[in-house]
Length: 382
Image (cartoon, rainbow, N blue to C red):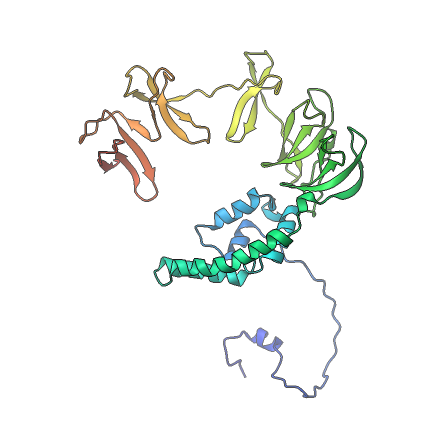
């Protein structure tokens, strides 16, 4: 007979019949078969989002920030679209599971997400939910502050010898994972990053990385790790502060980024200029950095509008310190006109301000409005 429920026939055949204690079973057949267990595949961003959805963790608006946060904090790294937990990620997870069991419990977190949804819908009270959460969390936090081991103070002896003073090197934990430090600290502040290997959560390095020498003083380059990932630094630091950026090559291994020179000399030291990459993208700088710190300023882009304040200079689009675009007068600092939205050569029909502004938002689309706080003129852009 077919299964009474919607279970597929092949699944029903694999299910055990109803049994109770004391039932005698008859052996009908004995087969031997060999199977090799396989570990579950590593998460990709898509499969991790699917797992979060299935467990009720996060919402579509927060998935990107969740993945971005664990990557930015170096709890995992991406290799060929797969997500690999780092040694730091394992350590943080173990400590949190030990001391904050509720928060690290999937069912608890999913239930809390559901409560937040009900608060948004007006079905639950915000203060009640926060009070219930805080009572338990505060107790766990106080206990953890007393009992959680201070990994930053822990040291592990190694066979490595400091290449600067000859004292033994010890393994220590830092913000970006484990590293080697001289046991003679603070008299000797020499540190060295551990070269990772595939499978331990560390970066796999191309064989040529170990051969790199500093172009400034011919000293060996050593692996370091900073807030933006692994990089090479001169072993003669702090006397020499030369660094080299590491990028992932075609084989998936980290290799030194090859900087591309341009056919132009530095106006300060006559050495060649070359493309470099910084926090806000590519830029042109002197190849003799850090001896020469010349950076070629990017030519500001004119938008075809005279400055509405001085009437003499052109309005240009510039990039701010954090990469955000803004508009200002080309005659700066003589004229200090600036606007965070694109100015238009059209006066406000309501208050007479000499220019309007244009902006685009997801909610309203492209709109034209007056920047005068006392004026509320606004219209859709054509």
